[in-house]
Image 1 (cartoon, rainbow, N blue to C red):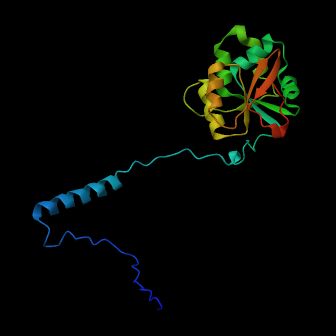
Image 2 (spheres, one colour; image 1 turned 135 degrees about the vertical axis):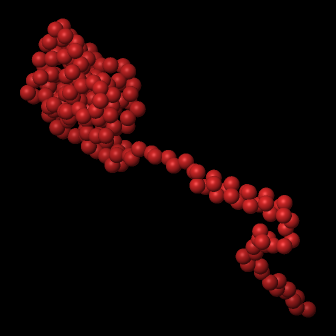
Image 3 (tube, rainbow, N blue to C red; image 1 turned 120 degrees about the horizontal axis):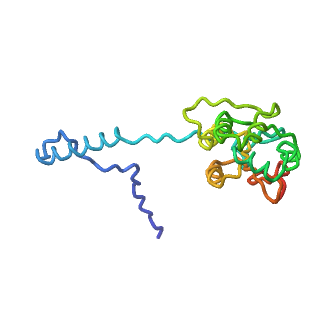
Length: 203
């Protein structure tokens, strides 16, 4: 005997039936509760917190900062000049020995103002900072605190290497991705967080 296969009708897109709020079967108490819930959900959707995330730099598309390359733009801090004088290092040749390429040192108005405030003791550092080979960067923000100025500048523009010996500033710079730090080690300049693609010296 041939078996007869019973073909059961398949159910497609089965939807749960919902009773609308205007249905007469719903009691007045339940209808009020449902209305309250609906209004709360609407308010919650309207009052959702909008998060403003900082726009990521296009220079950081790859694993390393694509805006870094010779000639290197080096942003100099106040204490870097002082430590360079103590270690008897000529700034521009020292940078070129470290990076094996042309380097353009930059001094902000805040750094220059700090050196002027330090007085006659740092007159040599001030004279070096006013050198024609150093590019001046004007500051348009309030206050003359150089650390905040440098961090703000490197957050906006990813083309700089920061030259500093300040531990607190180094810690702040390390939080900003793609910005290398130049510092003094064993009476010569050294650099950290430099991409290997540009032949950074191993430290």
